[in-house]
Amino acid sequence: MSELDPVHEAIERLEWMEGKEEETPHSKFKAMSRRTALTGGAAGLAATILAACGGSNNSKTTTTAAAQTSTNGGGTSGVFGPSSSRLRFTFVNHVTTNPFFVPTKYGAEDACKLLGCSYQWTGSENSNVNEMVNATNSAITGGADGLALALIDEKAFNSATQAALKANIPVVSYNADSTSNKRLAYIGQDLFVSGQEMGKRIIELVPSGDVALFIATPGSANIQPRIDGALDTIKKQGRGITPHTVATGAAVPAELSTIDSYVSGHPNTKGLFAVDAGSTQSVAQTIQKHSLRGRGVKGGGYDLTPVTQRLLAADQIDFTIDQQPYLQGFLPILQLFMYKMSNSLTGPADVNTGLKFLDKTTVGPYNTTKSRYEGSSTAAGVAKA
Image: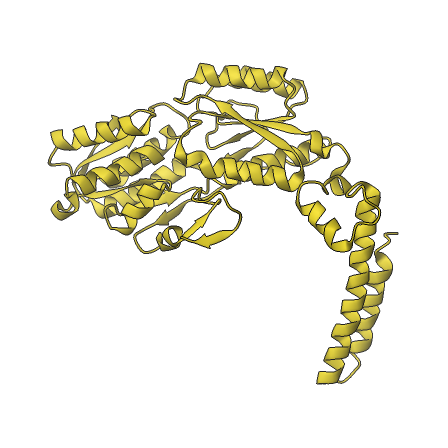
């Protein structure tokens, strides 16, 4: 029997007795007072239990202090076990310095603070798969307790994933996935379906004419399925449209230069659309630079950067798609942590982090607030911009 059961039983008895009484202002106040006293007692018991389980090393810690300890990364041992604070996880990323992943890193950091573990952010700055595989292997030999991999290549990570699982190191994928990989779960957007939905929006905006589809790194599993989905929809439903696929590169400055040059050389293009964060931002900047909205040019793409958000609100593009990058950092840590602490009994689960179209009106809250959830602030919570 739990030490809290007497309190719960007392509350249930009170509720049964109160149900027989006539409800008056006096009876309401009396009921509230009794509950406050009992739940206060429950809090005290909870503090004692947390201290006994290792949530606090100070037997004289007050209830308030014990609660603070449990939310600041030091109290999880009382819930999950004494070894939780020693867990170390590794994220392997394909564009480690890209601004899109700022909220992803905040999500991982916040989950680690909550659970009392730690994480490392590594990989490649420019989608070099060999560098990513080497980083994965280094994490395995270094004794990482779990891996979160951006599986941008269909097969390159298979051997490393298999080696990790054989060593009892759980592996989940995030942001990009591979159907041939043995990872335990995928946390991210359904990329092909999102591309199909983007294709529908393109057809609505541009019934006919030339449309450019920009992609940072063709073939990369985090964005290729999007452009494949868009082309699939256009082929089936937008027969008046002539799509042109254009590679822009992994670095944002190069993306902007490529898109600007393309627009200068193809003045009759009716729509400019992108499937990655850097290219989408560059599409908006190029449309603004050349005053293309006045010529009826449509534009849109993926993800949220401060520049994209500002220019979307200014009606320089028609939409962008949010896939909640914060969750792509927070949820892998949570799943890996649960897998380790439960000795593989629970944890991994596929999570679709969403397909949310934003336009010049609905992007408003993103521009009027600052938060770690969107990577616009280092502080906790949501504040006015």
